[in-house]
Image (cartoon, rainbow, N blue to C red; front, top):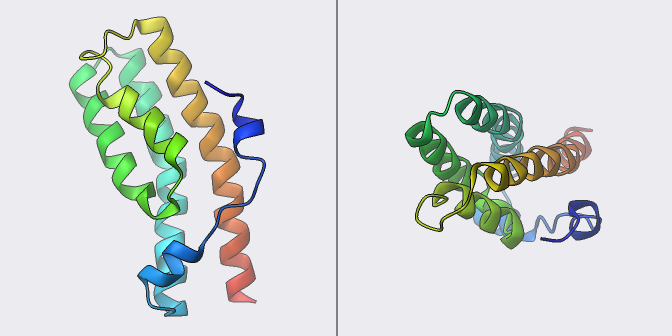
Length: 124
């Protein structure tokens, strides 16, 4: 996979989210704050489940995380989470799985900063 800094150096296109909420700024802010919380919560849970070898919980968390970032329309993010969710079906080894989780953690930091910035912009 590509270096995430190269992949996500551009800003998120928030058009899809804005269209989804039909331009309702109050709902948009709430949705972005919810996404921001997910970007902090789920990467930590993925790592915890990996460390504790809770594979069923790991897969369930990856699925929930995909659902919470779907509005960002970031295919690579979705693809990484899909790989984690289906790691056993795809024959992904534990060391590769850990690498995917680390990519998600870094990506969540970068994307979270963009989401937080957008929320700040909207609440000024």
